[in-house]
Image (cartoon, rainbow, N blue to C red; front, side):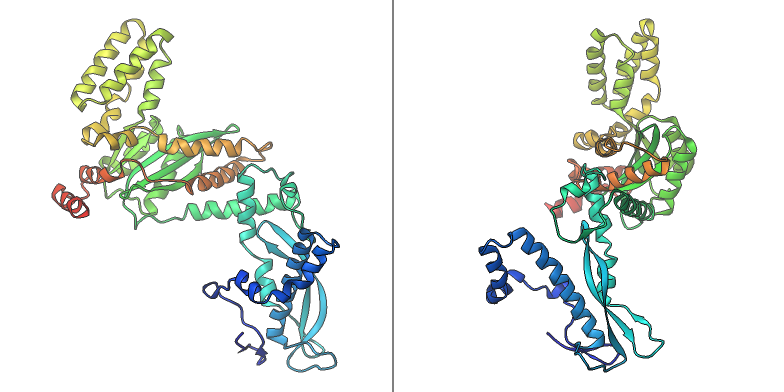
Length: 438
């Protein structure tokens, strides 16, 4: 290994290997198999199991690396010789982070020369002690269904493990989820052309959370924000949309908003985005709201009529459903009124003349309700909710975990049609681009 000089003028016997200089350890040990002979003898003679040998070897390697890191500052330790400005000063216990656990180790101590000498930190120890991947890995395990009480059981036994108590897990997850929420609400989208925004609410343990997912011109989905509050709370919705405007989803360009029918969401979109905010009401919600007001024998027929009307051009489809509402009003006035309420907003995608593939993706809130299901699965395992902030942190962590599995929508190749309908570009430019791509 190359030697370098440190800040104390000592020749460093080793250098820290960077990720782009990664060494293949399998090949290294194959060339130097004599290093593994002592461990092989312990296992072969039955004195130790392979698990215990590997665990102890892992801790021994960590302590050796800490010693090498200390040598970069104080030089090689030699009994009876005290040279340089930094001296060896014994050792003491410590802890380092190893992904999902903390490991107890014995670390060397260094002090500057003189009666008033100060403690000198060991770079590698400081880096391993504060490894941010620990809280991330703990969060990942908790989100996959392991409770804080059972966390210790799922970890392979390892000598010297520490810091995996229930309270430690709670602290680590809280810190990680708070940081994740802050980062999410600071995401910028000025560089992405968000064509559509899906907004939907979810109830968790009696508390409401509102989430927004954006669809860009490439067909990729992005989690835009998560806030505490119900979709019927106009102040909450407005705060969410104000945040989106500040982070790049401004009102200077037309966008399609797919919502569940909340009047508070519609009014907030109109207030902030004005004519640039085109609202598409979720058809699945509309069909369910109408049919649940009808007797069972009639539900299938009315549902079929509604689905057939949604496939027609806007004018014809609206006429067909208004006629259906007029017929329902004679015997089932609640169902008829529900059908007419916000009817025009269920035909926005028809008015934009989108392709059938795009209409399937943009006529309902299914794209955001799928991650809602993942959030329910994760939060359903929590037995005790301390406060609304805890609900928001868990929901955000679950949404971000679901975002890792987001895929492009099926009709992404037709998104240029939506871009033209929203005034992003002329049809000629888009058709030329499609021809070149083909």
